[in-house]
Length: 304
Image (cartoon, rainbow, N blue to C red; front, side, top):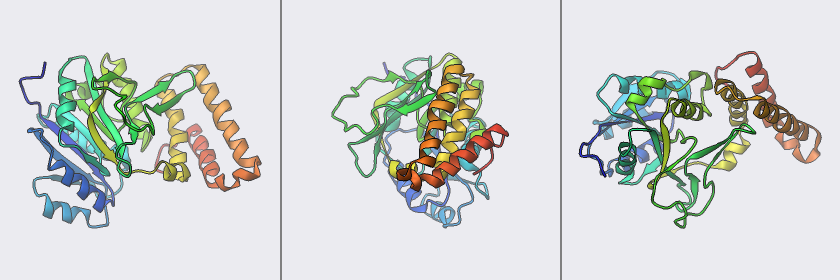
């Protein structure tokens, strides 16, 4: 049964030098049917004119200018702090390179309101370049190996997800709707992550506080991203390597996932990338991984 009230939602969009993408995102939000939401754009010191065009085109959007790049986590936390001082019932973190469907927010709020044990919900996320191809339908954590992966990753949608919300281990930070009361209880994103794995650790905190996380298959958004470009990026390898170790520490993972991560994953990957001639092109990623492990060991969690 749907709620008789209309909870308020604060949509937080972090932006850094992505003028074209955020303008497309804001344009898609103009068609959203949900009647009770506000948009807060947190700008991390963009130098591409994003701020002025947002003010001119969407004066109803609140713009918070940070002046410099705080990173994904601290930038979003700045938005969350602002939302916590208002009467918003929900906070939605939304990437600036997304396009939303008109009913996505209605479906997310309905799923969250249906049960008081639900702490956060997320949509089905498709590739912008391939609108029928799924990037994420929630996420799963392999606690034996310390691995995380997106559910239904790279599957073509032919209705296999059904219409009913289902419980998942985590929700992508690309689009996650969280109850304000839950954030009051468990806190915000951990700034040590800077970027990557932060939402996964946040979701573990939410679940361990007694709440459920749901993927809502009928809520649809598109995400402009390239897995190939991410795989080739030394910066992404750095954060994914370092922050996986930080994640294992913060969630108090056992010996088995630590052993798998360090020896059966990291060590073997580095050996392969160092010794096999066919992997010599991976040298930048290898160097990033070595630096990431070293930085984790010395407790360095700043920007790459």
